[in-house]
Length: 199
Image (spheres, rainbow, N blue to C red):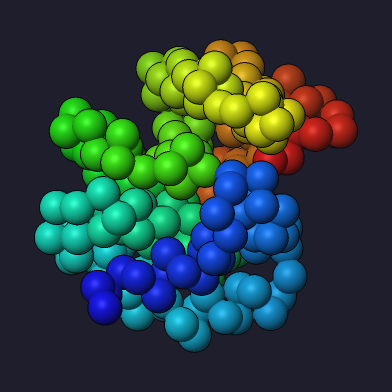
């Protein structure tokens, strides 16, 4: 078994279609349950630390390994280090790993539902060019998906567009300010009072 396979199995489950995968795993991906964070830490904490330290680069030689490395840099820190600055400590490296893989076309070897987690790295960037690319990529997934999956991928695109709007307006995500020790402007403070302002 490849060293990244247990992580991919845990993250995506065993369902076949994008809709079934999302139905089974969205609670893990986008919900918060303390026991999920504990499981992430216990099962993958060491790998996550290695990835964030700059190791495991050889994983990026294949599409599946590349995706697993992305998860270790982007998604897993947000669970293992939730509500601390370390939650975002892998972002810069994740963005570089994504850029390198996209330049090689590795995403084309992945099912659409797995490509979502490549493009989420772009969506997480506090930088407009990456946000532009995220919207572009999620638009492509929506256009390419089956009719019965349009609602799912339209939702992912909507979320990307909302992230884009925040970066276009503030050049950063105001909801990260407190965690990262950044002072919020009055405009950001007002924004954070609005529903849906905290991704």
